[in-house]
Image 1 (cartoon, rainbow over the protein chains, first blue to last red):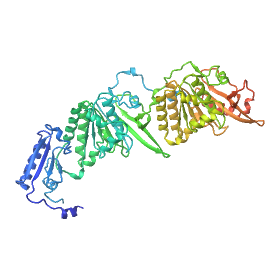
Image 2 (cartoon, each protein chain N blue to C red):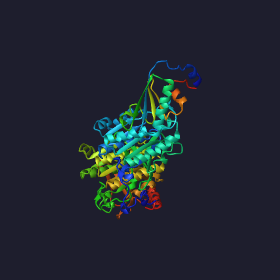
Image 3 (cartoon, chains in turn purple, orange):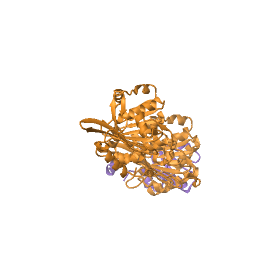
Image 4 (cartoon, rainbow over the protein chains, first blue to last red):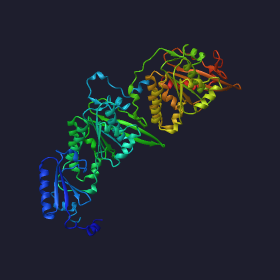
Length: 106
Length: 505
C-alpha cells in the first residue's frame, strides 16, 4: 500500500494557499516550540502562500469541539481540503511535511 | 440446610461510622447494593463485554442525576454511534435532547480517526480537558460520564502519553469534585482491555451478559468499592422499557416481621389442621404433589378466600393460561373470574423458557411492585427448574421468597413432583424457606382412587400430623373429618418425612 501511495501521491499544486490552524492550550513550552517549528517549515516550503491562525483553547474553549481537538498542540490544515491533523510539537519536520501532503509518504 | 443461609450479604450495622458520601444512581436495586450509590466526587469504573449494558447504566446515572437529583451532567462519548446511543435511551423514555435544551445535560461527541492524524513530537490531551471543563461549566455539572474512553487507544498511537494523560484526567475529575462514571470494555483476563482499573480504583462495577441454553441472563457485581460496604454477590439485572433494574433482594438479610395474624387456607378443615386458624400472614406455603393431586385446586381455594376478604392476589402461572385455570376451577365450583373483574385478582402467565431466571425474577418483582398484592401464588414453581441450573434456581427462589416475606405477602407455591416416591430437588432446595409444607398424594387403595393431604411441617404452630383424605367435587375440595385411611397407604408420606428430616425442618 505504501509503495503504491509513493507512486500515486501527487505533490500539491504550486500556488495553492494553505490555511493552517494551530491549537494550543496556553503559552506552554510545547506550544511555543510547535509554533516555532511550524513557522520554520512554512517559511521553507510554503513561502508566501500560507496563513497560520493560532487558537488558544484556554481563551476559546468552545472552539475545541468543532475541529475535534483532543491533543495539543494540534495543527489543522483546513485548506486545501481534505482536512488534515498533525498532533505534537511538530519537531519531526519530515512527518509534518508528510502530514501536510507536502511530501510523499515513504 | 439452614434458613440463615439466605443471609448471604450480611450487611454490618450502619452504626459503624460514617460511610463515604454517595451519589445515588436512581437505579432500583443498585443504590441498595452500593448503600447509596457511587462514591460522590470520585470516578467509578463500569466494565463489561459488548452489549452488557455499560452505556445504558452510565446514561441512566446521568439522566437520573439531571431529572431526579438536580445534578446536571456531562456525557462525553467516544463511540462512533453516539446518535444511536441517544436514540437507544430515547426508547427507554429518556429524552436527552430535552435535557440538553433545559441545560441539564451537555453532550460532547469525541471522534478520533487515526488515519486522519499524524503524530509528531510531544503532545498532551489538554484539548480533552478543555472540552470537558467547558461542558462541565456550561451546565454546572455534578456528574460526568466518559463512554468509552478506551477508544482513545485505537485513535492515538503513543500509549505512554495516553496513559499518563488518563492518570491525570482521573485525578483532575476528582479535583473538579464531579462524580464520574467511566465505561470500559472487558478484556481477556482483565476487567478492561487497556487496564483502566489501574487508574480508576475507587469503585468498579462489572456487568455480565451470558447466554446459557439459549436463555440470556444479565448480572451485575460490585468488584470493588473503596471505603464502603457493598453487596458482593452477582445480582441479576434487567433492561426493560422501564430502564435498568437490579435485584439485590438477598441483601436484605433476615429482617422479616413475624406477624401473628392468620389467614384462612380457604378450607375450614385445612385451617383446622393448622391449629384451627390457617396460615400465618406473610408466610410461605409449599404445596407439593404429583400430577393431578389437586395442587392448583388448593391454590384456587386460597385465592378465592383471600379475594373474599377483599385482599389483592397476584397469581403467576407457568403451566396454564388464566382462561384455562378459570375454566378448570369453575368446574370444581370455584369461580375466580369475578375477582379478576373486581380488580382483586391478577394473573401473570408466562412460559418458563421464554426468559432467563433473572428476567422472570425481575418481572415478578415488577408485577408485585405494580399490583401490591397481599397474597401471591406461583403455580407451579417447579416449571422454573427448566430454565436454569439447580444453584441458579435456588438462588432465584430464595430471592423471590425473601422479597415476598419482606413485603409481608402470604405466598403459596405449588410444586409438581414427577413421581410419588422422590421429593424433587426443588423441594429440598426451597423447603427450608417454607413456613408451611403441604403434601398431596394420590393412591389407588383397594381399587379406589383416593386423595390425601397432610401437613409435613408448619412452623410456629401446633399442626395436625394426620393424613386427611379429601375429594375434589363440583363444589370444591371436600375434606372428610378424621383420618380414615391408614397413613401407611400413602407411600409418599414416608419419603416426605425422610426428606424433611434430611432438610433439618
